[in-house]
Length: 103
Image (cartoon, rainbow, N blue to C red; front, side, top):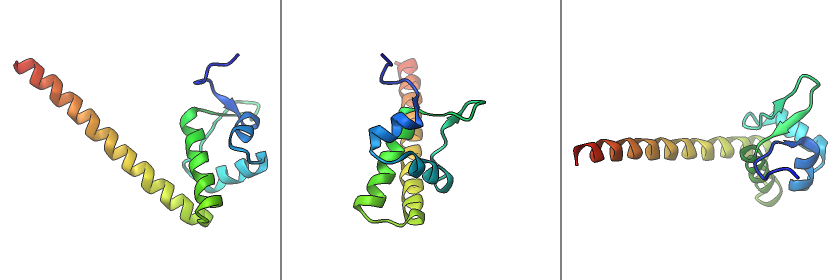
C-alpha cells in the first residue's frame, strides 16, 4: 500500500477529486500552477500539494463559478499569499535562532 505522501498517477488523482482525466489534462494546460512530474513515458505524477491545488481549482470552478482565467488569477493570488507567509515564518525562525544565540 502506498504511503499518503506518495506520488499519485493522473488516474488516482481523477478518482480523488472526482473529475475525469481529460479535465485534469485540460486544467494542466490552462493553469500554470498545476505542473505534475512527467516521466519519460509521459506518465504524470502528482504530489499532495498539486492535489490540493486541483481541489481548490475544482471548488473555484464548480462551486464558486469562476471562469478558468478567473480561477487561475485567484489561485495565483492565494499561492502568493502562501509564499509570503512561508517567508515570514522562515524569517521568524532565523530571528529566534539569533535571539537564542544572544541568551
